[in-house]
Image (cartoon, rainbow, N blue to C red; front, side):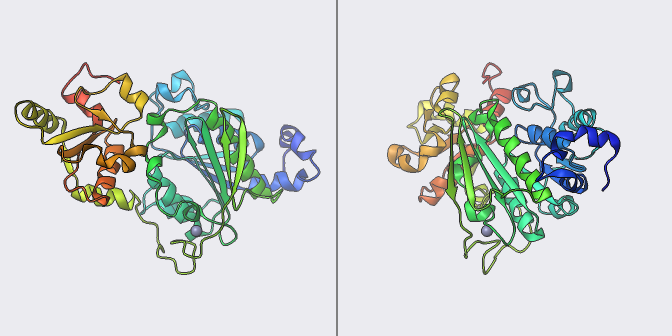
Length: 377
Ligand SMILES: [Zn+2]
């Protein structure tokens, strides 16, 4: 794709690089790159890809901009609060570089639409904060033969890896089954605002390299970044012959919903309590012998900020090692902020042979809405 005079001026610093040059810039202009999630990672990645002159950028997100996003989602301004992220992002990227096309996909990626959304792109960047989406996108990239640049952030740490189909390990080679601790989103765990900027920029850099063929991709190596100590480390990752999607005998041959095998089982078996159910249960137990133990599986700092009086705190990450702590006291009822982590807690309890775990559907957010308006977090 030939460049206009304006484009030659705009991309002058890249055209000057001998390894990159006109050929590299033209490849970038022809490239189609999809960014899944227009959040902390997707925002900086999109800014750099648009600035660098990637011809077509796709954005997938169905969320709207919230005030608490602005601390790290650098595409948005205070005026964007309430707007669809992909629309606000598209406007901002085109203002930065009107030479590129930006396609907005305001959809939730699911098994039935993931192929359709991904199929017209050459490279996929995953910056989603949902574990289910990560597996769905990772699998779809293997099945469609698309390179994937994946990254994740948690508090003060980040990870990134590039998956090149049929050459290096895929996302499932790295995480064969969902690491339960990753289920909480950064909304709950907290994240240093500038951290996703580092990881998102790394993702953009990988995508530019893949699109132009410059350099060596971060394939077969998991890069971790510790912002507190400012330390980058690398972990070698190999392809697994028994990988369920890219291995010798793949079990996954079509995109499938991945709420996690564990969570799926728990959804069927665990006792689901509405805020009213829990209130009734708590009132009964004051008069009778307690038949249940209320366990708050949020992080200690969340627990200390606000919690229900009867609840004891066992963070989800410690639960498996502390299942014996309430043996004989009654069935556990798990609670968390939104009901996601408590469902995983049920799954872990079921796996350990604890018969009838329950959890508060909608979490403490629902409790605040329906039972106690003074309960704010
Ligand atoms: Zn694999």
